[in-house]
Each structure stands twice: as structure tokens, then as C-alpha cells.
Image (cartoon, rainbow, N blue to C red; front, side):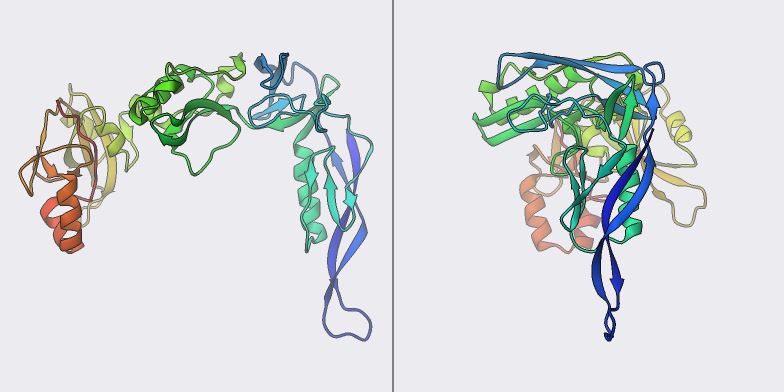
Length: 364
């Protein structure tokens, strides 16, 4: 299916009897794009969605299809994957058919809410506008004669509100994107609803949000027909399934009761052989200086840790710790604060820490 798109663009020109160029807007831009036309067999149903509108007593259902590594929706959706009308207060959430000619010209910019194109103000060279239009065309397709548009993969997220202690609360919600202000551990894929509820329960208990318990999810229900289309996985779940962890995952692994050791070997497999028969996790470290091919690994060996003594004051440490070369020793939070303010970073590291890896230790 081919359509023609009319658009505005800007170019820099030097008017007659002038020396300096200036930006001029042209309205004669035109580009032809192709919209894929598919059958239901080419784009199978991947996810069936059912639910009830939040603001009214009415049910809804729709299907998300899978094609070219992308989910496609036949209707307009909000951030919580609830059908949303394209006009305020209306139920016109079905996507309109694409005409043979789409006119994006709106004053001095390119804008068309009906077909989901929003251009920018200012300088828009013709090459940039054409690239935006081709990207716009890639978000559209026609499946079994019904217009579809690309949508993001749904995901569960644990959200907290207020200052804890039931001032606000904790909930499991839906999201269509990642928020860099939230921890990656707060996000779960469509196949991890139970894990999301369990994680949110732990968060609510720590915050004292008793009114949020027992934790429930009240959003749409997703029936995943093609599990391979679900790409989002909770990072903590992935680390627990893998023996080889990325550098910097020590805090999360130590929460499960691992104790830090170290070894220098050639490969990850070599490190695992040294601890054969034990439940271990590896944290990939840096290459060893002066030893080509050698790699340093932090080896976390699964064993119960009943208590940890502060190497500065000798007290039993609790909560956030600072790891030490000697097994069973670390710094309590008070000594960490005192030493970091009164010692140089080099002396602080040489006396009390190795690379500054901190972790939580369960106390019996």
C-alpha cells in the first residue's frame, strides 16, 4: 500500500541583495511511503487483553499481534493499555484507515493527531522531515484489512506513593516504558505477575504500608499466546538463574546469603571448578595487571551468615555494610560515616575495604 505525504520543511536561503542566509519555510514537500499489508497468518495474535474500564462499568477486549519483532494494536491505548478515544470523551479508539494522501501541513509545522505524527518547530531540513516520515510509516500496518499501529510491550511495575507508613501506599501497576527514576528491579514482564506481587508485598511491608496488603493487581488481564514475544524480564530473576553475573551485582546476590571470596583464573568455568559442589555466584571483575589472559573474579559462596563484626569498633554490624579483606569483618554504618569523613580515600580503602563493594547481611 502506497501513500503520498505532504509536508513543510525549511531551508537556508540568501535573499537578493543580502549577505546573510535566513531560514525559509516551504510547503511543497512530498514523499511517497509504503505501508505493509498483511494477513492474519503473517501477523499472528500474540496477546489477548481483557479488562474493565476504570472510570465506568464497561468491559473491553482486544488483541495484540506480532510481526517483525513488534507488537501491533488495532486501537488507541493509554499508558495502562486501556482503550482511549482519539477525541476527549469519545469512544473512537479504532484507528482510521490511511488515505491515499496524508497532509501533515499545519501552519508552519508538520502535525497530524489523527495519524499520530507530531513534528517539531524551528529548523526542519527536508532530509530530516523525510526521515521522520519514513519512521512514521514504519509504525503503521494493515492486518486483515484493519489498520494497526506499533505499541510498546506491556510490563508490570511496583510503584510507591507518599512517605510510607500508609501515607500513600504501594501498588503494582502497568507501564508502557521504563522510567529511569525507578530501580530496574521494580519492573516485571507479563509472565512474572506473581513475582511482581511478591516483590511489591516485600516493599509494602518494609515501608509499613499495611493498607496496601494483601497486594492485588487490578489492571487488564493479559493472555500470552506466544511467550517468545515477551522480552522483558526482572533483572533479579535473571541473575538468580545465572551462575555468571555482571560486575556490580554483589549487593543483590549478598541479600540471599552469599559470602564474598576472590580468585584469579582464566575463565568463568575455571572459577566454578574451584568451588565444585558449592552454590556459588561469580561477579566478573577486571583484568589482572601484569598477567595477560588472567581475570579476577569475586566468588560469592552460599553459606549462612549469622553476624558480622565491625573491624573499627568491634560491635555487631547491622544493615548497610562495607566489605573487608578478612572474612567476617566489615564496618558498621556509624564507623563508615566517621572514617569516610576523617580518613583519606586511599587510607580508608586500604584499611577497611576492597573496591568499596557494600552489601546487606542478614542477622540472626
